[in-house]
Image (tube, rainbow, N blue to C red; front, top):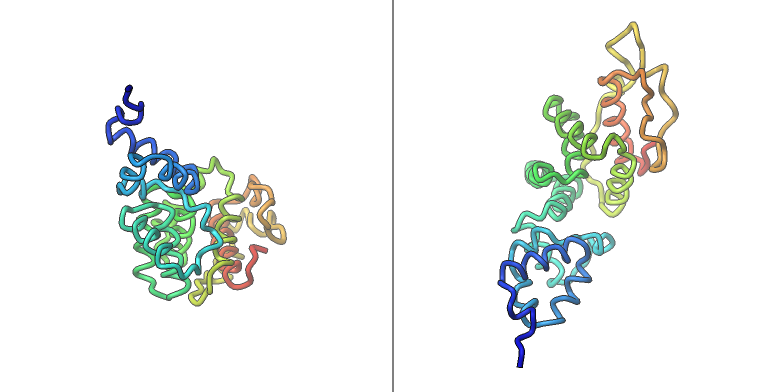
Length: 230
């Protein structure tokens, strides 16, 4: 009797296969675990928790199941960028534990999770650590090939699932008045606001970098307060 092909695969390869499945869909990972004992045994490896996608759990933020939170903590402990981002958002904006929240958001951003780059950059910008904030915001913009509307939409949808108890702010002067008085660019280019499907060149070709990022940050802060970027 021939050995099943899966039995001949090294454990490292099984883990790599499961990690790719998990990165696509947690539901598919569950189905793979149920398929064979070999997959079930390999599925507890930390590498898999590091790569698993949480998109199936977007509406389960307030799930009280111990199994659910055990799974999320396994993801955090294995530095899953998406779970670190969610943990950071909860810590910073809901539980008002700013240092802890920033730590999770920064770690997620350092691992390249674009939504974390966006939020962490904005928080740093409002905290007057503008150089650090701009580094992450520009990294986010570059990763998204200068198309940021989808990132804004995802962040807004996630914020809607939170109790926002910790609001950040940027002074209106910072958003409304350009230091480049000859150009006066933000005032000339400004429209009333965004929603998620607005065009990504919102600021116009003549907007300076200062006005562009002041405007981005100001509208994020407004979204926290009102629920919309307008």
